[in-house]
Length: 288
Ligand code: PMP
Picture 1 (cartoon, rainbow, N blue to C red):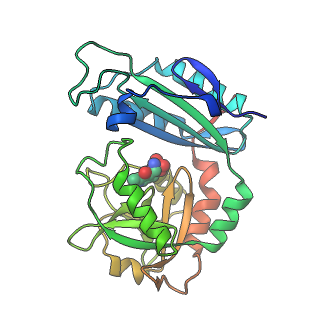
Picture 2 (picture 1 turned 90 degrees about the horizontal axis):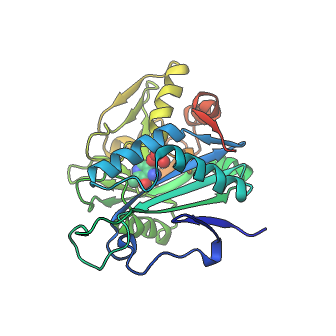
């Protein structure tokens, strides 16, 4: 069955789906994106993701490529055409196609929209969560507007590759004061010895994860306390548990940080109960 991608008004065969060479996303990373999880035929937290897309667009003075309702239709249509019941949908909006110039196009152009969907195996994800992941830390070297979900991801790409080179799965950005910001594509959490969850406040230093927000509701439903404060690498290494959250990984235990095992080096029970309760609490919209 061929994969189908939506590109600027057309549903194209995935292999033939192309954007123009002067798309400002391609040349200048002048664009934003979202990734939503699809689970058991539902789009998870679509409202939160589209609200954040709206914020990213506004912060960068970009227009919606189509009306929000139309985008929701396109998202469902791409999921339907690709027969995805479990997986991810990717939404990218760039400032459009215009002669290359750093400043915004002087003649208004329509922003460009790409939507793709792919399947993921929930059993494989569950297996990964049983094992947990290892992380390394890298110095924070990104700009100070990482609260905007832009496609300019080069520092994140290099950080993730550093993790892969070190035999790990994720890299945490660390500020000069030794506190953890977030992962290359995940938010970072720890569980303290008294069972509280700790994650960095989502002001301007990190991306305000949609999964992060839902995990806070899940924590509430499980009577777990959440503290939004910075934590150091050392505190994380000696925590009861550590884990990351994202639409792609949901809740994924972290079993070692820079080679030091977290607790006994195995996934903890808090991360597991958050993962198990996640789907019941998250907002679910039928995917077709
Ligand atoms: N931080 C960064 C840098 C990310 O790229 C992501 C994934 N989009 C997240 C956090 C987690 O965000 P979400 O839960 O919305 O997927």
